[in-house]
Structure formats: C-alpha cells, structure tokens
Image (cartoon, rainbow, N blue to C red; front, side):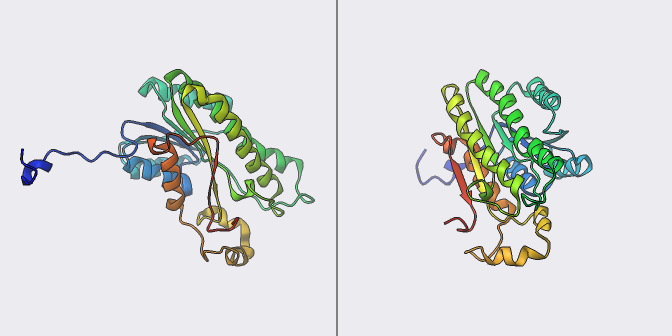
Length: 257
C-alpha cells in the first residue's frame, strides 16, 4: 500500500498506556483515588477501586463504566486484603498494579496527640500499606512482575510539626517503599512512592482557617488538582517507567525545592 494512500490508517486502534492491565486502587471512592481510577480506566485498565465509603465508592465505579469495579475494603484488615486479592485473582488471574492510596490526614501536634489517635493513624497510613505491599507483592512475584505505587506526602520528605503522626507514617511509607523495591526487584516488581504537596481534595478541610496561609507558601501559587497527581501515578504504573524503582517522586509546586 502506498504511503500517501489515505486508507493506510484505516483499522488502526489506539492503545492505552494500561491496556490489558488489572489495577487495584485503595481509597478510590473520592478525591485523588477516584481521579487515579478514572485515568486508569481511560488508559485501558480494568480497575478495582476499594474503600470503606461504600455508597460513594459504588457511585464512583458506576460513573467510570464497565471497566471499574468497587469493593468494600478496610486496609487495616489482613483478612480483607486476602479477600480482595483472592477475588481479583479468581476473576482475572493476575494483578499488575497496586496503588496504596488510602490514607487519612489529621492536624495533631506531638504534645496534643493521644495514643489512640497515633495508633489509628498508623493502622491506616502505615500498616495498610504494609499489608497491601505484602499481599500484592506475593501475587506479582508469582506472575513475574508488576508495579506498586505508594502514596506518601511531602510530609515524608521534611518535618510536619502540626501533623506529627501523619508525618511519621509518610516517612515510614517512603522507607518501606525502598526496602520493598530492593526485595521485589529480582521478581520484576517495581515499587515507588509519590509525594504530593497541597492537593485540592477533601483533606484540605483539616487545615481549617489556616489553609490560605498554607497555600501562600506554595511557590507555584496554587494547590494541585487531583488529576495532576494521577498522571504521575499513571506513569509509574505503566511500562513507561520500566526502569524506575525504589524512589520518591515529588509533586508539590516547588514547596520542597
């Protein structure tokens, strides 16, 4: 066929960056997790979004179309991780991407924080990530590859004086990511962390009246949209980042520059 034949492009099919991949995104009912789920679906993945906000999660999945599925999932529970991964394995036989996105943020200083607050934060933000990496890592090891993306924060790169336990968990996620990357690399499994700055989601409500002064300290002069973070997560989930593992990726409007 001649190169200038206008029919030469007929039959070509656009290929998404995640075509054929199966992905699990925790905390996917709203905010950043929902933005990641939407983008993953648009790029061809079968997406399981999980949360404890069942009504909202089911609505989000329905809005995203037939390639999105919602599952109830408390990331603190070892049994629920086993149930979620078992269901995905039974239906699809594989898991290509895990995004450990579920997390909470609370403004709590060191001197004012209770032990119950501390333990609650660690259970979701740190233990949940550990359970997810362990469960998904076993599946990915056996299938010969995969990508795990852990959502940390700029609070995992510097001190967070008004959010002591939150900062502790995000530093932990950063370190856990590096250890897991080294351990899982021989099996073709990549593990990276994403460190957002101030993102326009419901979490900003925790700042209360202090929010304007927080935004003023962003060199780019604005908060980020959730989809801007989702695009970075997409890169790390896709084969475009095939030689990236064990590192932190900042998206913070130059706050830590």
